Image 1: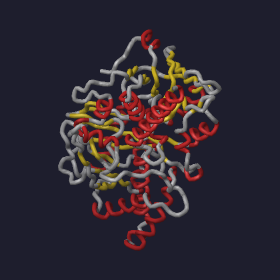
Image 2 (image 1 turned 60 degrees about the vertical axis):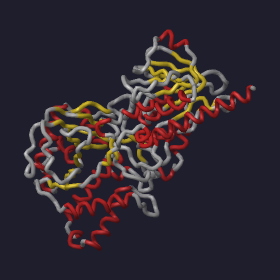
Image 3 (image 1 turned 120 degrees about the vertical axis):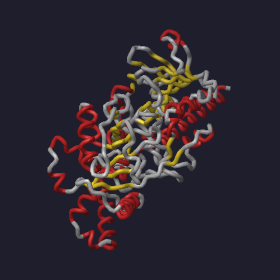
Image 4 (image 1 turned 180 degrees about the horizontal axis):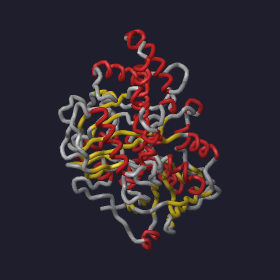
Length: 481
C-alpha cells in the first residue's frame, strides 16, 4: 500500500526532496533518492501512481490504457528492472494485413514491403530538414517509379496508400498529420525488439518494483507518497537561499530543500504561468510554448470470443477507396483517420483500435455509445467479408488529452526542432537560487534529448535529476564541514 499520512503530521515532517508527479520519471527519482537514504515526499494529483502508464483489468486479463510496450532491450532501464525481477517479457511481432474499404484484402507481401520502406525513410532523413510526410512521400514515389512503375501510375493507389501511411506514421508519433513532425528528429531507438510486452503482468508492475513492493518487498521507508495532492504553486528562492515551498490545491504547504518537477509538457503549457513563483525564465517559457505534445488514443473493445483468431495477421490496417471515402458524412470523417487495430497480449478477448492527434481528442469528447457504434461500422466495412464480427461487451476509451494531469500522451519533434535543437536539454535545466544551487529540477520524457516519448526515456530523466540532487547534497555537506 502507498503510505498516506495526515495533513498535520505530514506538514510538520522534514523532507530533503519533494517530487511532483508520480509517473515513470517521478517514481524513478523518488525511489533513487529514497534508496540513498533521503527523506522524500511524492505528490501526485491523481488517485493513483503511474502517470501515463496505466494497466486495468479487462476481458480475461489486463490491458494498457497508456504505454503499451518496452521499446528496445539494450541499455533499457525498464527492461533491466523487469528481467532483474524474473518477469518474462514477451516480444510482440506484427504482420500487417491491409484491408480495403470495400472489404477486400490486399497483397500482404507487397503492402508490408511498401510500408516497411516508408518507415525506413523516416529513420533516414534527407540532408535538408523538411516536414516528415513530404520527405517520405517524395522518396516513396521515386521508389515505386523504379521498382513498380505500373503501380506508380495508379494515381488513386498512390494517393490512398500515402494517406494510409500518413495515419500510420501519425499514430507512431501521436500526430494529427505526419507533416507536423520534422524529418530531422533527435529520437534514437535502443537496440533490440521494439515491442516488448509485460503481457499478463501489466506495465503497472514497474511501479511495484520501483516502490520495492514487488514479491512482498519491504518498501521504501523514507518515501512518503500522497495521492489527490494537486500542486498549484512552487515558490522558489531565486534571490535568496531559503527553502522551496510547495502549495497544494487543498491549501496544504510543504517546505523542502529541492523539488523535482516531473509533470508533462501539456501540464506545463497550461499551468506554468501560475505554477512557479517567481516565474520561469523567458527562455524556458518560450520553449514550453514552442514544443509539442501529441495524443495517442485507444478504443479498446471486449468481445465474448476472439473472432479474429483465425487471421494470419497480428496488425490490421485500413486503406480507403476514394469513392468510399467521399460517401462518409462530414460528422463521421474522423473514422477515416483510424489507421488500424491490434490485439493486446494481456487479454485474449480484447481488441485495440488506434487513433491519434485531433481525432483522438475528438473521440474523447464523443459519447461512448457513438464511438462504439461508429467503430463497429468501420470494422464491419473493412473486415466483415472476412469475419463474422459480433457486438462488443464493453468499450474503453482513453482520455489522455482531457485528463488535466497529463494533457497529452507524449512529445514529438515538430517543425521548429531543427532551429532549436537543444530545446529538451534547456527544458530540463534547473532553477537556481541566489548562490547558484539547483533548487527546482525538471524531469520527464519531454526533457530527454534522444529517448523522449518512451517510458525508459522518462525513467532516465528521473534518475538523472535524482543523481544531480544527491551530488549537490554531497557537495553542500562537504562545504559545510
